[in-house]
Length: 204
Image (cartoon, rainbow, N blue to C red):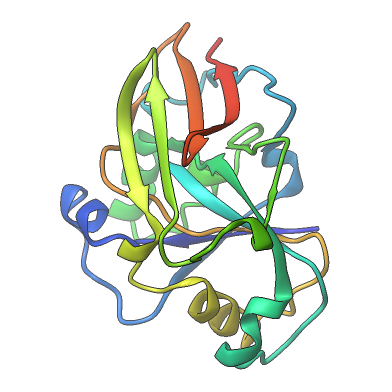
């Protein structure tokens, strides 16, 4: 399986990082070794002093597809979970300043915690109105809604599939809202879709 991620998909997050608004989805990938499951703790790496959390809705691909039309895209994912795209912001800034790829800042071990449970698509009355949030030590730090995405689920799946064949079991991180920030030792991160707790992990 592979982990594909969408960058700059919420206007408020683009503004807070002072990035340019892209005309097409920004795609990057994480290796499967980035996965962190079953509420396992996240261990701060020694190569960064500025690890940021970015909470995101995550799509689970349920069948293989390439060159998928947007109108058929909803049939290619069957469940939605929640994850964190941990980012070594200092390393990312260094790499970006040199015009280099920034996979090392996004794809390091444990950088992609995901919820153990993925909620069936049928459980959502409106895929364009999904509330989600991240609490850090009991305080809401990020709050988002799928209606605020620049590129919705169907657009994301259709666009990716023009370049990369999607396969059953692949995961797509769909972008983060504003409010990203650094994690500290002993932080407790709890993620919700609506009022359903999706993950609860500690920083070690």
